Length: 388
Image (cartoon, rainbow, N blue to C red):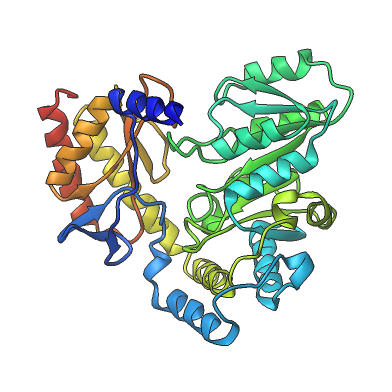
């Protein structure tokens, strides 16, 4: 096992070593760590619903009524009515005929891509797609063609010049997890229709963020009925755990019988499903949560840009501050922690070498005043480290 020791030595030398940090969530955006209280700017809890009393009660009630676990895979042990109810609500919310819940968004991507694509098929994948999409492409028996990030000219050329005797699938994140920018899904769909390709979009970071009432990128671009596969997660805006695929009834029936990550996994606990269903109900009833989220994101981004920081992204709550080297990202992370802020230092292999960054995420649960104070701290630390 010496190779393990050598690898760990190497990542430590490159400031790339990672380990989980034990902490306590006091509420949706405040954390206790080693006896100190911090403001979290590193969570994907975009709508702040993890600590909503209605969501918590739904989860607790499910435990009391149905126990702590599901007992097995849905195709062998049976499927609790909570799953069907949630899937119906997700389909309605996403504007599709049906939906299927997976244990994680990662498993939804891996299972769906490997089920849809086989030998002789082609996948066209954005170069900055999430690791779960990349791994799904690798596990499929098809060939993957990577196109430059959000570059529709490059995608068009590769669609035109790639020889394919089978199916073609274009797959993209809706909102990219590290940069917070939005896929040009309208243009992707037009190219797909021109080249008879399927389209799959991963809306993990778009639900609760984009579209009417947070319905995602398909709704944001007005593409109802033109995107074949919509993937999402229950672990971000929907304040729970798990993933899902939304699409036609035929697609969902196909995945039930073909997607190995669904077939061979013990189902989520009823409490987890109940929490997601409750969060979805709240989102549908209070779309103003999305408005507050986007207002918070705009305020933070505006303050950082005005100070001269190099901030990428669009209108989403993912706000990356590009710093370059991994060691500088770690140094900035530690300085911010000393000032009461928890921010993610993103380093390779999550991003390319030289593209390390601080990834700030805001929530609808943040108050405007604490975000403005946090922005002032980030700007001061950036000046200290000569980033501006």
